[in-house]
Amino acid sequence: MSLTLPKSPADIDVIHKKRRRTAVEAALRAPFHQKRLPRNLQLDNIHEPEEWAKIPVLDKEELRALSPREFMDDFNTAKREDIQEFWRSGGSTGKPLFYPRTFKDMEYMFEGFRRGIALAGIGHGDTAHISYPLGIHPVGHVTARVCQKLGAGVNWAGAGSSTPSALQVELIDQIRPTVWMGMSGYALHLANVAEAKGFDLANSSVDKILCSAEPMSNAKRVKIERAWGARVYDGFGMTEMCMMGAEDGLHDGFRMWTDMFYLEVLDPDTYMPVGNDEEGVLVTTALWNINATPFIRWNAGDLVVWRSQGHEGDGYAIFPRLKHTHRTAGFFKVRGINITHSDFEDMMFAMGAIQDFKCEATAGAGALDVLRVSYEVKRSADSKALADELAQKIKHSFQLTAELVALETGALAKEFEGAVKAPRFQDHR
Image (cartoon, rainbow, N blue to C red):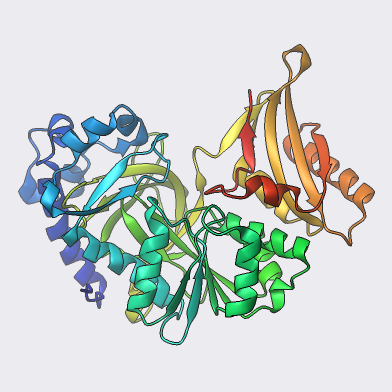
Protein backbone atom coordinates (compact mmCIF):
# COMPACT_ATOMS: atom_id res chain seq x y z
CA MET A 1 0.00 0.00 0.00
CA SER A 2 1.21 3.52 -0.81
CA LEU A 3 -0.47 6.86 -0.37
CA THR A 4 -0.51 8.72 -3.66
CA LEU A 5 1.69 11.78 -3.44
CA PRO A 6 -0.40 14.99 -3.50
CA LYS A 7 -0.06 17.04 -6.66
CA SER A 8 -0.81 20.49 -5.27
CA PRO A 9 -1.13 22.41 -1.98
CA ALA A 10 -4.89 22.26 -2.55
CA ASP A 11 -4.72 18.45 -2.36
CA ILE A 12 -2.96 18.72 1.01
CA ASP A 13 -5.54 21.21 2.27
CA VAL A 14 -8.34 18.78 1.41
CA ILE A 15 -6.55 15.99 3.28
CA HIS A 16 -6.03 18.22 6.32
CA LYS A 17 -9.68 19.25 6.44
CA LYS A 18 -10.97 15.68 6.31
CA ARG A 19 -8.31 13.82 8.28
CA ARG A 20 -8.01 16.26 11.19
CA ARG A 21 -11.63 15.55 12.03
CA THR A 22 -10.95 11.81 11.69
CA ALA A 23 -7.98 12.16 14.04
CA VAL A 24 -10.05 13.95 16.69
CA GLU A 25 -12.82 11.35 16.41
CA ALA A 26 -10.20 8.62 16.91
CA ALA A 27 -8.82 10.43 19.96
CA LEU A 28 -12.27 10.75 21.50
CA ARG A 29 -12.49 6.96 21.64
CA ALA A 30 -9.63 6.97 24.20
CA PRO A 31 -10.51 7.61 27.89
CA PHE A 32 -7.30 9.64 28.19
CA HIS A 33 -8.42 12.14 25.55
CA GLN A 34 -12.05 12.09 26.67
CA LYS A 35 -10.91 13.59 29.97
CA ARG A 36 -8.73 16.32 28.48
CA LEU A 37 -10.51 17.45 25.30
CA PRO A 38 -13.17 20.18 25.57
CA ARG A 39 -16.72 18.87 25.50
CA ASN A 40 -17.87 21.70 23.25
CA LEU A 41 -15.58 20.94 20.30
CA GLN A 42 -17.40 21.57 17.03
CA LEU A 43 -16.20 18.75 14.82
CA ASP A 44 -17.75 20.25 11.69
CA ASN A 45 -15.46 23.25 12.15
CA ILE A 46 -12.42 21.52 13.67
CA HIS A 47 -10.29 22.54 10.68
CA GLU A 48 -10.82 26.23 11.50
CA PRO A 49 -7.87 27.77 13.42
CA GLU A 50 -9.98 28.99 16.35
CA GLU A 51 -11.66 25.62 16.85
CA TRP A 52 -8.45 23.62 16.39
CA ALA A 53 -6.68 25.78 18.98
CA LYS A 54 -9.19 24.63 21.61
CA ILE A 55 -7.44 21.23 21.63
CA PRO A 56 -4.80 21.40 24.37
CA VAL A 57 -1.22 20.62 23.32
CA LEU A 58 -0.09 17.22 24.63
CA ASP A 59 3.39 17.15 26.13
CA LYS A 60 5.65 14.50 27.60
CA GLU A 61 4.81 15.48 31.18
CA GLU A 62 1.28 14.16 30.67
CA LEU A 63 2.60 10.85 29.35
CA ARG A 64 5.07 10.60 32.23
CA ALA A 65 2.11 10.66 34.60
CA LEU A 66 0.76 7.43 33.06
CA SER A 67 1.91 3.99 34.13
CA PRO A 68 2.43 1.47 31.30
CA ARG A 69 -0.85 -0.23 32.28
CA GLU A 70 -2.70 3.09 32.31
CA PHE A 71 -1.29 3.92 28.89
CA MET A 72 -2.57 0.64 27.43
CA ASP A 73 -5.97 0.98 29.08
CA ASP A 74 -6.62 4.71 28.66
CA PHE A 75 -4.58 5.90 25.65
CA ASN A 76 -4.63 2.83 23.41
CA THR A 77 -7.85 2.23 21.48
CA ALA A 78 -6.95 -0.94 19.57
CA LYS A 79 -8.29 -4.40 20.23
CA ARG A 80 -5.67 -7.03 20.96
CA GLU A 81 -6.47 -8.99 17.79
CA ASP A 82 -5.83 -5.90 15.65
CA ILE A 83 -2.32 -5.22 16.99
CA GLN A 84 0.52 -6.29 14.71
CA GLU A 85 3.46 -5.19 16.89
CA PHE A 86 4.64 -2.82 19.62
CA TRP A 87 7.06 0.09 19.23
CA ARG A 88 9.20 1.20 22.14
CA SER A 89 9.13 4.94 22.76
CA GLY A 90 12.31 6.80 21.86
CA GLY A 91 12.83 8.26 25.33
CA SER A 92 11.13 11.64 25.02
CA THR A 93 8.72 10.66 27.79
CA GLY A 94 11.57 9.95 30.22
CA LYS A 95 10.62 6.27 30.54
CA PRO A 96 9.91 3.56 27.99
CA LEU A 97 6.34 3.07 26.89
CA PHE A 98 5.26 0.54 24.28
CA TYR A 99 3.00 1.84 21.54
CA PRO A 100 0.73 -0.72 19.88
CA ARG A 101 0.65 -0.59 16.09
CA THR A 102 -2.26 -2.18 14.27
CA PHE A 103 -1.99 -4.04 10.98
CA LYS A 104 -3.62 -1.04 9.30
CA ASP A 105 -1.28 1.43 11.04
CA MET A 106 1.76 -0.47 9.82
CA GLU A 107 0.82 0.16 6.20
CA TYR A 108 1.26 3.88 6.84
CA MET A 109 4.38 3.35 8.97
CA PHE A 110 6.03 1.54 6.07
CA GLU A 111 5.01 4.38 3.75
CA GLY A 112 6.70 7.03 5.90
CA PHE A 113 9.98 5.07 5.87
CA ARG A 114 9.66 4.17 2.17
CA ARG A 115 9.51 7.79 1.13
CA GLY A 116 12.67 8.74 3.02
CA ILE A 117 14.68 5.84 1.62
CA ALA A 118 13.41 6.36 -1.92
CA LEU A 119 14.09 10.11 -1.71
CA ALA A 120 17.79 9.34 -1.19
CA GLY A 121 17.77 7.32 -4.41
CA ILE A 122 18.16 3.92 -2.73
CA GLY A 123 16.56 0.87 -4.26
CA HIS A 124 17.19 -2.09 -6.56
CA GLY A 125 20.89 -2.87 -6.86
CA ASP A 126 21.87 -1.32 -3.53
CA THR A 127 23.02 -3.23 -0.46
CA ALA A 128 22.38 -1.61 2.90
CA HIS A 129 24.44 -2.32 6.01
CA ILE A 130 21.94 -1.51 8.78
CA SER A 131 23.43 -0.57 12.14
CA TYR A 132 20.27 0.68 13.80
CA PRO A 133 19.34 -1.27 16.94
CA LEU A 134 17.44 -4.43 16.00
CA GLY A 135 15.06 -5.08 18.84
CA ILE A 136 12.11 -3.43 20.48
CA HIS A 137 13.09 0.00 19.11
CA PRO A 138 11.38 0.10 15.68
CA VAL A 139 13.71 2.05 13.41
CA GLY A 140 16.08 -0.83 12.58
CA HIS A 141 13.65 -3.57 11.66
CA VAL A 142 11.26 -1.24 9.81
CA THR A 143 14.13 0.24 7.79
CA ALA A 144 15.35 -3.23 6.86
CA ARG A 145 11.92 -4.44 5.79
CA VAL A 146 11.29 -1.33 3.68
CA CYS A 147 14.69 -1.63 1.98
CA GLN A 148 13.78 -5.15 0.94
CA LYS A 149 10.38 -3.97 -0.36
CA LEU A 150 12.28 -1.44 -2.52
CA GLY A 151 14.56 -4.16 -3.92
CA ALA A 152 17.66 -3.30 -1.88
CA GLY A 153 19.66 -6.05 -0.23
CA VAL A 154 20.16 -5.88 3.53
CA ASN A 155 22.77 -6.89 6.08
CA TRP A 156 20.87 -6.92 9.40
CA ALA A 157 23.91 -6.03 11.53
CA GLY A 158 22.17 -4.07 14.26
CA ALA A 159 24.01 -1.86 16.73
CA GLY A 160 27.14 -2.85 18.62
CA SER A 161 25.10 -4.79 21.15
CA SER A 162 24.02 -7.17 18.34
CA THR A 163 27.18 -7.26 16.22
CA PRO A 164 30.44 -5.97 17.76
CA SER A 165 31.60 -2.78 16.09
CA ALA A 166 34.98 -4.25 15.11
CA LEU A 167 33.14 -7.05 13.28
CA GLN A 168 30.87 -4.49 11.58
CA VAL A 169 33.93 -2.75 10.16
CA GLU A 170 35.15 -6.12 8.83
CA LEU A 171 31.73 -6.83 7.28
CA ILE A 172 31.72 -3.47 5.50
CA ASP A 173 35.09 -4.42 4.03
CA GLN A 174 33.99 -7.95 3.07
CA ILE A 175 30.38 -7.46 1.90
CA ARG A 176 30.98 -4.06 0.29
CA PRO A 177 27.58 -2.42 0.90
CA THR A 178 26.69 0.72 -1.04
CA VAL A 179 24.69 2.25 1.81
CA TRP A 180 25.17 2.48 5.57
CA MET A 181 22.16 3.20 7.81
CA GLY A 182 22.25 4.03 11.51
CA MET A 183 22.32 6.77 14.11
CA SER A 184 24.75 9.60 13.44
CA GLY A 185 26.52 9.00 16.75
CA TYR A 186 27.14 5.38 15.81
CA ALA A 187 28.50 6.46 12.42
CA LEU A 188 31.16 8.39 14.32
CA HIS A 189 31.68 5.45 16.66
CA LEU A 190 32.33 3.08 13.74
CA ALA A 191 34.69 5.65 12.23
CA ASN A 192 36.66 5.66 15.49
CA VAL A 193 36.78 1.85 15.53
CA ALA A 194 37.95 1.81 11.91
CA GLU A 195 40.64 4.36 12.74
CA ALA A 196 41.87 2.23 15.64
CA LYS A 197 41.93 -0.86 13.37
CA GLY A 198 43.73 0.98 10.58
CA PHE A 199 40.85 0.49 8.13
CA ASP A 200 40.40 3.26 5.54
CA LEU A 201 36.65 3.77 5.84
CA ALA A 202 36.73 6.81 3.54
CA ASN A 203 37.70 4.55 0.63
CA SER A 204 35.19 1.80 1.38
CA SER A 205 32.28 0.84 -0.90
CA VAL A 206 29.76 2.98 1.03
CA ASP A 207 28.75 6.07 -0.95
CA LYS A 208 25.54 7.00 0.87
CA ILE A 209 24.69 7.21 4.56
CA LEU A 210 21.15 7.45 5.94
CA CYS A 211 20.78 8.59 9.54
CA SER A 212 17.87 9.27 11.86
CA ALA A 213 16.87 9.22 15.56
CA GLU A 214 19.50 11.80 16.61
CA PRO A 215 19.97 15.50 15.78
CA MET A 216 22.39 16.13 12.92
CA SER A 217 24.42 19.34 13.21
CA ASN A 218 26.46 20.70 10.33
CA ALA A 219 29.67 19.96 12.22
CA LYS A 220 28.63 16.35 12.81
CA ARG A 221 27.62 15.95 9.14
CA VAL A 222 30.99 17.25 7.91
CA LYS A 223 32.85 14.95 10.31
CA ILE A 224 30.86 11.88 9.21
CA GLU A 225 31.23 12.65 5.50
CA ARG A 226 34.97 13.19 5.88
CA ALA A 227 35.45 9.95 7.84
CA TRP A 228 33.29 7.80 5.53
CA GLY A 229 33.87 9.51 2.18
CA ALA A 230 30.11 9.31 1.62
CA ARG A 231 27.13 11.65 1.28
CA VAL A 232 24.93 11.88 4.38
CA TYR A 233 21.13 11.97 4.17
CA ASP A 234 19.22 12.63 7.37
CA GLY A 235 15.68 11.62 8.31
CA PHE A 236 13.26 13.07 10.84
CA GLY A 237 10.81 10.99 12.81
CA MET A 238 9.55 10.03 16.23
CA THR A 239 8.13 6.82 17.63
CA GLU A 240 4.83 8.52 18.46
CA MET A 241 4.32 9.29 14.78
CA CYS A 242 6.58 7.56 12.25
CA MET A 243 9.29 8.68 9.84
CA MET A 244 7.85 12.10 9.10
CA GLY A 245 10.32 13.57 6.63
CA ALA A 246 13.74 13.25 5.05
CA GLU A 247 16.40 15.15 3.14
CA ASP A 248 16.61 15.30 -0.61
CA GLY A 249 19.71 16.05 -2.66
CA LEU A 250 19.79 19.70 -1.57
CA HIS A 251 20.39 18.73 2.09
CA ASP A 252 18.68 21.92 3.23
CA GLY A 253 16.08 20.73 5.70
CA PHE A 254 13.62 17.85 5.76
CA ARG A 255 10.88 17.35 3.21
CA MET A 256 7.96 16.76 5.60
CA TRP A 257 5.09 14.43 4.69
CA THR A 258 2.34 16.98 5.27
CA ASP A 259 -0.27 14.68 3.73
CA MET A 260 0.40 12.20 6.56
CA PHE A 261 0.90 14.63 9.47
CA TYR A 262 -0.53 18.02 10.36
CA LEU A 263 2.37 20.19 11.51
CA GLU A 264 2.32 23.38 13.57
CA VAL A 265 5.31 25.52 14.56
CA LEU A 266 4.34 27.37 17.74
CA ASP A 267 5.86 29.63 20.35
CA PRO A 268 7.05 27.25 23.13
CA ASP A 269 5.57 29.47 25.88
CA THR A 270 2.27 30.66 24.41
CA TYR A 271 1.60 27.93 21.83
CA MET A 272 0.69 30.65 19.35
CA PRO A 273 1.87 30.27 15.73
CA VAL A 274 5.24 31.84 14.93
CA GLY A 275 6.08 33.62 11.71
CA ASN A 276 8.12 32.32 8.79
CA ASP A 277 11.83 31.91 9.56
CA GLU A 278 11.13 32.07 13.32
CA GLU A 279 12.09 29.22 15.64
CA GLY A 280 9.26 27.42 17.40
CA VAL A 281 8.31 24.10 18.90
CA LEU A 282 6.97 21.46 16.51
CA VAL A 283 3.46 20.24 17.38
CA THR A 284 2.31 17.26 15.34
CA THR A 285 -0.92 15.38 14.67
CA ALA A 286 -1.00 11.99 12.99
CA LEU A 287 -3.62 11.86 10.24
CA TRP A 288 -3.55 8.17 9.24
CA ASN A 289 -1.77 5.95 11.79
CA ILE A 290 -4.38 6.64 14.48
CA ASN A 291 -5.93 3.22 14.99
CA ALA A 292 -4.25 2.49 18.34
CA THR A 293 -2.49 5.56 19.73
CA PRO A 294 -4.13 8.74 18.42
CA PHE A 295 -1.50 11.43 19.08
CA ILE A 296 -3.04 14.84 18.41
CA ARG A 297 -1.17 18.12 18.93
CA TRP A 298 1.84 16.27 20.34
CA ASN A 299 4.85 18.28 21.50
CA ALA A 300 8.00 16.13 21.77
CA GLY A 301 10.22 19.15 22.45
CA ASP A 302 11.70 19.64 18.97
CA LEU A 303 12.59 23.21 18.08
CA VAL A 304 12.35 23.87 14.34
CA VAL A 305 12.20 26.54 11.64
CA TRP A 306 10.32 26.35 8.35
CA ARG A 307 12.85 26.36 5.48
CA SER A 308 10.13 26.68 2.85
CA GLN A 309 6.39 26.30 2.78
CA GLY A 310 5.61 26.68 -0.90
CA HIS A 311 5.13 24.27 -3.79
CA GLU A 312 8.57 23.93 -5.46
CA GLY A 313 7.89 21.28 -8.10
CA ASP A 314 6.57 17.79 -8.68
CA GLY A 315 6.91 14.61 -6.66
CA TYR A 316 8.49 15.11 -3.26
CA ALA A 317 9.03 18.80 -4.03
CA ILE A 318 5.37 19.33 -3.15
CA PHE A 319 6.34 18.94 0.49
CA PRO A 320 7.67 21.90 2.51
CA ARG A 321 11.10 21.92 4.15
CA LEU A 322 11.63 22.01 7.90
CA LYS A 323 14.95 22.64 9.67
CA HIS A 324 15.45 20.89 13.01
CA THR A 325 17.50 23.11 15.33
CA HIS A 326 17.64 21.18 18.62
CA ARG A 327 15.63 19.59 21.39
CA THR A 328 14.56 21.56 24.44
CA ALA A 329 15.84 18.86 26.80
CA GLY A 330 19.38 18.83 25.42
CA PHE A 331 21.32 20.80 28.03
CA PHE A 332 22.61 20.82 31.58
CA LYS A 333 23.63 23.66 33.86
CA VAL A 334 27.12 23.95 35.36
CA ARG A 335 27.86 26.78 37.81
CA GLY A 336 24.74 28.58 36.61
CA ILE A 337 25.68 28.35 32.93
CA ASN A 338 23.58 26.40 30.44
CA ILE A 339 25.65 23.93 28.43
CA THR A 340 23.51 23.19 25.38
CA HIS A 341 24.53 19.77 24.13
CA SER A 342 24.13 20.61 20.45
CA ASP A 343 26.25 23.78 20.75
CA PHE A 344 28.98 21.96 22.65
CA GLU A 345 28.95 19.08 20.18
CA ASP A 346 29.22 21.50 17.25
CA MET A 347 32.26 23.13 18.84
CA MET A 348 33.99 19.79 19.45
CA PHE A 349 33.27 18.22 16.08
CA ALA A 350 34.36 21.39 14.27
CA MET A 351 37.88 20.77 15.64
CA GLY A 352 39.26 18.37 13.05
CA ALA A 353 42.03 17.04 15.31
CA ILE A 354 39.53 15.67 17.86
CA GLN A 355 38.58 12.07 17.18
CA ASP A 356 35.81 11.74 19.77
CA PHE A 357 34.76 13.12 23.14
CA LYS A 358 32.44 12.91 26.14
CA CYS A 359 31.31 15.73 28.42
CA GLU A 360 30.46 15.16 32.10
CA ALA A 361 29.04 17.38 34.82
CA THR A 362 30.32 16.27 38.23
CA ALA A 363 30.12 17.55 41.81
CA GLY A 364 33.45 19.08 42.77
CA ALA A 365 34.99 20.19 46.04
CA GLY A 366 33.41 23.08 47.89
CA ALA A 367 30.00 22.51 46.24
CA LEU A 368 31.38 23.77 42.92
CA ASP A 369 30.34 21.75 39.89
CA VAL A 370 33.00 20.61 37.43
CA LEU A 371 32.74 20.33 33.65
CA ARG A 372 34.98 17.42 32.67
CA VAL A 373 35.74 16.94 28.98
CA SER A 374 37.43 13.70 27.93
CA TYR A 375 38.66 13.54 24.37
CA GLU A 376 40.73 11.53 21.91
CA VAL A 377 43.28 13.12 19.58
CA LYS A 378 43.99 12.03 16.03
CA ARG A 379 47.44 10.49 15.70
CA SER A 380 48.70 13.25 13.41
CA ALA A 381 47.72 16.09 15.78
CA ASP A 382 49.86 18.10 18.22
CA SER A 383 48.38 17.03 21.57
CA LYS A 384 49.73 19.97 23.59
CA ALA A 385 48.58 22.61 21.09
CA LEU A 386 45.16 20.94 20.82
CA ALA A 387 44.69 20.92 24.61
CA ASP A 388 45.49 24.65 24.77
CA GLU A 389 43.13 25.41 21.88
CA LEU A 390 40.32 23.34 23.42
CA ALA A 391 40.65 25.03 26.83
CA GLN A 392 40.48 28.45 25.19
CA LYS A 393 37.44 27.56 23.05
CA ILE A 394 35.48 26.25 26.04
CA LYS A 395 36.39 29.31 28.09
CA HIS A 396 35.44 31.68 25.27
CA SER A 397 32.19 29.92 24.30
CA PHE A 398 30.84 28.91 27.72
CA GLN A 399 32.72 31.08 30.25
CA LEU A 400 33.90 27.97 32.08
CA THR A 401 37.30 26.46 32.80
CA ALA A 402 36.93 22.77 32.03
CA GLU A 403 38.84 19.82 33.41
CA LEU A 404 40.41 18.24 30.31
CA VAL A 405 41.27 14.53 30.10
CA ALA A 406 43.15 13.20 27.07
CA LEU A 407 42.32 9.54 26.32
CA GLU A 408 44.04 6.82 24.34
CA THR A 409 42.69 6.22 20.84
CA GLY A 410 39.81 3.75 20.98
CA ALA A 411 38.96 4.28 24.66
CA LEU A 412 35.61 5.91 23.97
CA ALA A 413 34.79 3.39 21.25
CA LYS A 414 35.09 0.66 23.88
CA GLU A 415 33.08 2.63 26.43
CA PHE A 416 30.26 3.44 24.01
CA GLU A 417 30.08 -0.07 22.57
CA GLY A 418 26.61 -1.54 22.98
CA ALA A 419 24.88 1.76 23.79
CA VAL A 420 21.81 2.56 21.69
CA LYS A 421 22.97 6.18 21.57
CA ALA A 422 26.52 7.22 22.43
CA PRO A 423 26.31 8.79 25.94
CA ARG A 424 28.53 11.76 25.14
CA PHE A 425 26.79 13.95 27.73
CA GLN A 426 26.51 12.65 31.28
CA ASP A 427 25.34 14.36 34.47
CA HIS A 428 26.79 12.61 37.53
CA ARG A 429 25.64 15.06 40.20
